[in-house]
Length: 339
Image 1 (cartoon, rainbow, N blue to C red):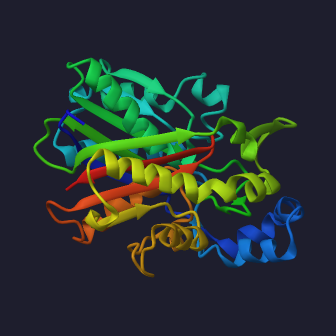
Image 2 (spheres, rainbow, N blue to C red):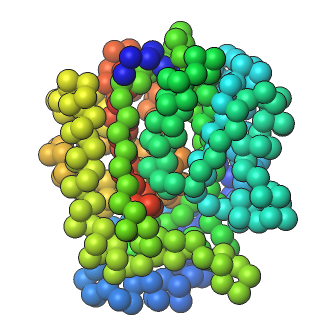
């Protein structure tokens, strides 16, 4: 990358209400049984035992947009800018009952409301629902493309927020859905924050039905095709992740040994162990995260984990960060940055 673009700030917001995973599994028992029924008994057992999640955060009476506004406001304050300094707002939320409801959103993305409520009326507005948990990489790559072709775009606000539709918190055999929002500020020639070294992303569109959102009898459902996940996605899941990691490292003339911190999703304990095994990392290489208390928050996972590492003082100037995640689409992504 020839541009000097930094992650000037990152923030997230989670609702105060939580719920035990066991309670969710019991309440959504029929959904869980139907989702896992095509799998072998061994696969069903591994799906449940490998979660590593104890609780999830749930919006309840709190609107998802309130979380998005909170995360964006935190990021703007941390970056030391005003909303009028933002030239582009990009919303990459995957799904929520709010964003799919014409009554609450009038067909507009969260970015439209943010531009007005924050006072960033002159900002360019973009939105997409591509990439799921890997959406952050797609969003960064999109923002960099705009910044590369338009020098007037100096500051970009990336936002995402996802809340499970009612009765859809269990996404077994994969994970458990926790509600959250996050925001990232990218600045050209910014004074502080990790410098972006490169972003890689890829999709395999023929796997788009592995996880889908459908409207059934007037309500929304997240449908997981367990057999597709087991037979088509998982055999190539880590292979494609490794491909993205190697491409990102090669583009910056780096190797795995150069990376100081690996920041990965909170899909499940089993998934995080698989990521370490793929890279040949020793056990415990991934830093602890609040995944046990938050659940899997889709694309907000990476931001949450990055913010926690920073708060704990783990990230020091000059260190190399590798952020990696995969999500629906089916999409894989990797971002490299130097603190």
